[in-house]
Amino acid sequence: MTPLETPLLPEGLRSRMVPGVNGLDVHVLEAGQPGQKVALLLHGFPELAFSWRKVMPLLAAAGFHVVAPDLRGYGRTTGWQADYDAPLAPFLMPNILRDQLALLDAMRIGQVRLLAGHDYGSPVAAWCALVRPDVFTRVALMSAPFAGAPGWRRDAGPDVHAALAALDPPRRHYQWYYSERRAAAEMDHPPQGLHAFLRAYYHQKSADWAGNQPFELAGWTAAELAQLPGYYVMPLHATMPEAVAPFMPAAEAPWLTDAELGFYAAEYARTGFAGGLQSYRCNTTGANAAELRLFSGRRIEVPAIFIAGASDWGIHQTPGALARMQREGCADFRGLHLIPGAGHWVQQEQPQAVAALLQDFAAQPA
Image 1 (cartoon, one colour):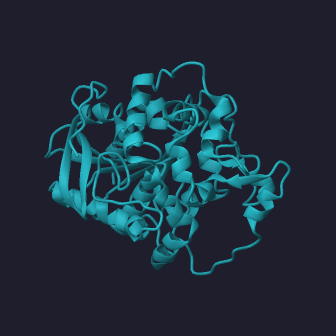
Image 2: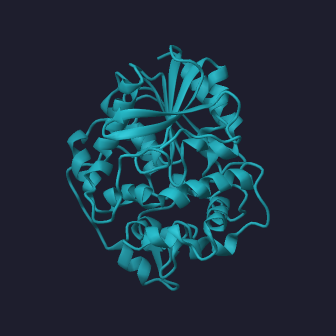
């Protein structure tokens, strides 16, 4: 795989491949110069390192060497396979942490001053900071709260999925849809086309969609989860392309032009979605929890903040997680920041506000 060549990258961003990274050849975007303090930015689903394109020059101007990789399963990073019947072990959280440490080693980086992760990148960042505080000295979690390490006592409780299916109209949780064998093919080849599917998906989860008026849910019950929008708790028999199709916007968004969206569509047309979906299977099968119980009782000890869009339902999709992150998950929690005018794609919708918060956080005393 070759580095990225596109006029869509802001001036000062560089693309290159880093070979020999825990079995991968990792594609990274960089800004700033080696030898400066390091900022490592981890993307979510369905995004890429490209999602940080507007934040990276701002951090570089503040004196950072900024690194944003395409994570395992995504984009131009190669060396992974995501066949549904292939082993899940390479996508388990401990191995994703190995990817980040191996990348730093390959780039001759000993310490990260600022670690930020958005969406799926948020739990990756959280576990990096929890397990290796000597390497990752402060962490910004974005859009997905970290509720702490899983405990040893497991109380499954009532079957919320059966209860969701029994609602009128019947519903199901998107993470369990994403974990099904058929999900990747249905998203790889949506009837409306990949560009239109992604446009509707990004739009409905952004502040541009008026239906995003999030509030805290009382608990992990069907009645409470049913209050989430249909991209989180879907119509039972719908595919994700079908679930978001009615919300197709009339025009491109100022924060995500058709050209930029076309880049995402082209990359996912080449790789498919299966690599990104593996992380959902690692969670819904319980495989991640089984590995991470080793750290039960441990907290993130380094300074931590949380950033999200004020219109992001993602902060409440796991009821209670936002409060547990501040109360239990982080020993040195420095602030909760909900940015107006942003939904789930906060670093793309409001990059200047995100960059300013990250710079302020990085400048705080340890």
